[in-house]
Image 1 (spheres, rainbow, N blue to C red):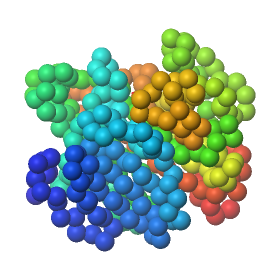
Image 2 (cartoon, rainbow, N blue to C red):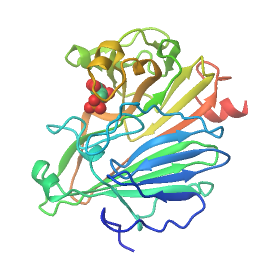
Image 3 (spheres, protein in one colour):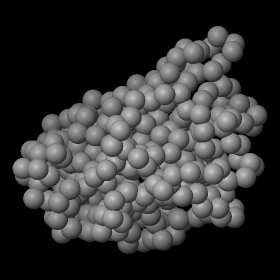
Length: 318
Ligand SMILES: O=P(O)(O)OC[C@H]1O[C@H](O)[C@H](O)[C@@H](O)[C@@H]1O
């Protein structure tokens, strides 16, 4: 079966682990269901994960109470930032209607993962006027047996004129936290970063772990493949893993910027943190026919987490 277009009827997703929910105004969504109350919701608009719940049904991602409906990008969850450059902020992928990909090229899967969905985005005529490159962007979103979430992006250059293209990319992940002042990020200490608040000047991080006392907007360069977000009050640690994505953006707008943002509550900065696996410093270049792959893995584990122990399996199983 060919990939559904945005105007085709809802695809029949025949699996007890998947549900397709139709809603007006570009708000159709797919729900992935795991054990107990684990679930993930994905909006076709933006190909955006808007909810990830653990087996107690607790929400793990931040979504603003002031998030605006399409065609505006949606504040929260996991917006996909592509293709950035001299375009609208964060590129247009988060602002387009994606389709279900009924026939994705094979992707090695863990047989224990039953709940997954494949989406696809191709540029429209208008997109090609803005960014004159033909591409196929395939996104697999999977909910693992233990409630972990993974997003795998495959971007292929389908230009027929022989031209390469370059882009930057980010999984703009908004984590829900109890109180930003009590949160610590481990794994980025001693890393070099570009400070977006200081004209992208390069610095080296000092100290044992990263804590938050004011606005932060940094691009950590060549960041490790595992980063932990430790939420003391919630007794929860998010473990973020990344492949194919050298950098990690860390962002919290804090009070002043929060007030200036139309789609964000004045005090919501206290309950969110963005840690965004990304390729920012060096754009990715693809020749025609070439494909790039970038993966994000998220798990939420109880904070019996020991400092410096970034393996979630060890955290869970001792
Ligand atoms: O408002 P948005 O376009 O969604 O961007 C929100 C934020 O995203 C990233 O984290 C950037 O590093 C920030 O500079 C930006 O303010």
